[in-house]
Amino acid sequence: MKIYISVDMEGIIGVVYPDFLTNRGYDYSRARKFMTEDVNAAVRGALMAGAQEIIVNDSHNAMTNVLVEELQSPAKLITGSPKLHSMMEGLDSTFDGAIFIGYYSKMNSRGVLNHTFSSRTVYKLKLNNQEIGELEFNAYIAGFYNVPVLMVSGDDQVAREAQNLIEGVKTVAVKEARGRYTALCLNPKDAHSLIEENAYKAVAEKDKISPLQIQEPLELRITLLNSGMADAAQIMPGVERIGANILQYTATDIIEAYQAFRTITILAGSIIQM
Ligand SMILES: [Zn+2]
Image: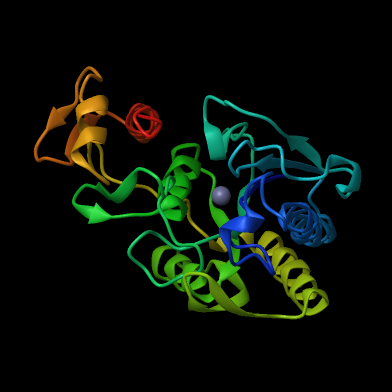
């Protein structure tokens, strides 16, 4: 049995503030350790349930956060960037299930460190006229490969988002959002026990969960933070500008939608230094 784990940082136990999130931050080295520990708990649970092969994909920022020297054997790690499929790199139809660790709620919600892929460029992302976040977009990518998302950990807000989206998904809220930069955190030992236990149950009961799918073709609508970002990103072929800050793109499948979205955010981000 093969299990895929995508791990982000904003929804990791103890992480509440941007200082944890980049290598310029005072708390970054602690956050890397916390992130590795949350992943290891999920790996232990998946192994107990019979997983033989586990691939962990580091999905935050430069994607070199997880401490490979402390990774629970026999899990393997995809580290570094850029990657063609970014937060879902390495996933294909040979996997039996996916687990999302350290995830967070979409922009315009009330979760800890909420945003949608890029807090510096994206105000709102809509797919087929529904506002979505990273959890949902990544779950559709898994669904494209017929892989169900079995478990999600993060704060209580992303846990609720996951439950509303995926019937039967196991969730672990390692912290309760008290604001965008404030949380009531579980004791890490208790959080790790919960992650391990739920990863075990999620993998053991994997056949009860269906892969998440969405009707194609897909209409992607992205509201950027300002019109300068839309000026930069509208050079992308196939993009239509439908407002000062709003771009639209029609994709034939979810993989194309993901690539188009990421291209637009990279182009939009190119003007930040100006
Ligand atoms: Zn992140």
